[in-house]
Structure formats: structure tokens, C-alpha cells
Image (cartoon, rainbow, N blue to C red; front, top):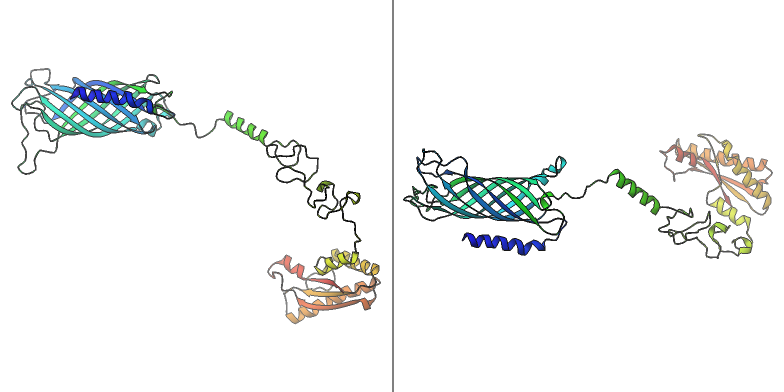
Length: 425
């Protein structure tokens, strides 16, 4: 049985060790030997030494990642009496085979922050075993199941070998004979064998031999740092700066620029290509009318008669020329005088045009009062235009009261409401 288990463990390690594909090796073979101590059950009067040299185990371990794994191990040895004359002589052989889960506590608790050569594993599992007393009235092969748990300290000797120091506790179940072999364990009348009734422990020293093609094993693997060093950060910044370099100064970095020699001042698209918005063959930065096609002889502007009155009507009728007033006042604010002058000059150049002057007020105060105020404002602008030399027959005015299109809670909006506008007839 022992030879079969040993052969299985060795074959599994050698056959599967080459299959691990990762940044680190996952397989290891572990060989350990040392002391054992049976605690109970022992026949009264029989004693075992505190440290009985007589245990060995062999295991194969596989790590799923750098923190967790599993192992299959086989342990064997013998118990004997204490070295003095205080106990009758006895000799009991045993073996056990266990499948265990393994936790790399060194990586979990970040041992690497103070040492990268010291580790700690925790393990727990279950398996089968046998207790074989060599003498005594109860000597027979006693088959048991067992649970095992322990801790393994590690010292890294090289990338292929580590020194182990392990302490494990084993609990046997359904054990029918004492560890000394001189007493049977009585079964209960109804429940069959006793449950987990045998307790012993082992303390061993040994070696782990790491298998695989990678440079390190999962026990000692440390993932790449989450944060770059100052030197790495400086290099990365330098690379970014080079990537964002804009040789022709068009606002598009070289790595995206499909026209790397754009003329200075040219408007470009997202790929750095010179824009010609109106498609007239003249780039926008040279086109005086970039959104209206025209010949190069006219600097890219269309050749047509431009009627001043058409543009004036558009500007006036869409509310771009206004005269503004202070609160509760019919006297135009000083900065609005240019609007009156502009309207007067235009009327002089276009004698066939007439204008209506429209007065407005904000929503503060009584509505009937605001209606009269808006009319006084329209009348004051009418008088200014007449004083500027415009015939009154070409002018009309009317008060439209409150402008409700603006937010009356806003002081700026109310200022926009206190105005006169113009409409070309």
C-alpha cells in the first residue's frame, strides 16, 4: 500500500509538472521528516516521549494561484514508549494519506513588505489511514479516517528549493485500538464505532522542490507593483509628450495629423486637414467669405450686388439694434446712443424706407403704468430721430407694454426688457 501511494504521488508530479502555464510555477514535491506524539487514546500506564523521532511524509502540491492551492500527501512512522522505565514497551506503525487545501498566508498577509525569503502556509484536509500495533492483546490493523490541519513555515533557499518547518494535528476517526496496542476501544451498543477519538501531532523539517519552467514559484510570486516608480512615471510622461507633439501647431498631435505641414493659422478638422468649409477651393484661412463660395479673384466671396437695406431689415427686424433705458426712465442710456445714430444714418441713405419704433417695459409695477412708460420710451426715441433730421412722416411709434418673454426674477433679463426696438416698413 505504501509503495503504491508513493508511486502515485511521484508519477502525478512528474507527469503534470510540465503542464503548468503561468507567470509562476505551480507544482512542488515536498519531503519532510521529524517527530510525532500520540496524545490519546493510550492504555493507562503507557507513556510516549514528548518528541518521538519517527515520522516522515511525502507530498505533491499544486497552487491554483499565488494564494491558494491543494496537495496530496502520504505520511508514515511509528510510535514507541518513553525512553525511561516509566512505561511498558510498545511499538505501533501507522500511515495516512490526505487530500488538503493550502493557503499561502505569506502572500495573503503581505510578508513581502518585510521579507521576500520567509513564508507561511496553512493547510487543512481529510483522508484515510491505518494504525498497526506490533504487539499487545489488541494488536491488529486498524483502519481509520482522519482530519489534518497545520502550519508550515518556509525559508526560501533558491528559486527551486525551500526549507520547511511544519506542525500538524491529526484526528483519527473510528479508531478501535489504543496507540500502544494494549487496549481495545469499546464500541457503543447502537452507534457503531466511536467517532473522531484519536488525536496525535507531528513536527517535521523538510524541503520543497519546485517544478516548472518559470523563474519562481507561486509561494514567492509577487504581482507587478500597482504603482509606477518615479523613473517609470517620468518615462511614461516623456512618451506621452512625444506622442502629443504638434509640429505644425494646428492643434492636432502628430500621431493623429494626416496633414503634418499645415500652414500657420489654417483652420483644420480633427485629422489636421485644412478646412474649406464652402468648397470653393480656397482654404478657410485665406477665404474672406469662408461659408459662402466665391472665386479667388474676389478673395473667395460671391460676386453679387449686396443691398444694404436687406441686411438692415434682417438686423433690425430680428432685434439686433435696440435702445435701452434705466428703471422707470424714458431717457435712453448713454451707450444706446449709437443705435439711434445708426438708424438715423441709414434712413438718410435710404429715403424710401420708414420705421416703426416699439417701446417696451419690464414686468415690475402696474401693467397700465408700464404701458404708458413703454409709449413714452418709444416717443423719446422718435423725438431723437426727428432731431437728427429724419422727417416725422417716415416714423411711427407705439408702446407695447410689458415684455413677458424674459425672466422677471433676473435683473439682467429685466434690463433687456426696458428698451425700444425698430421695424423696417
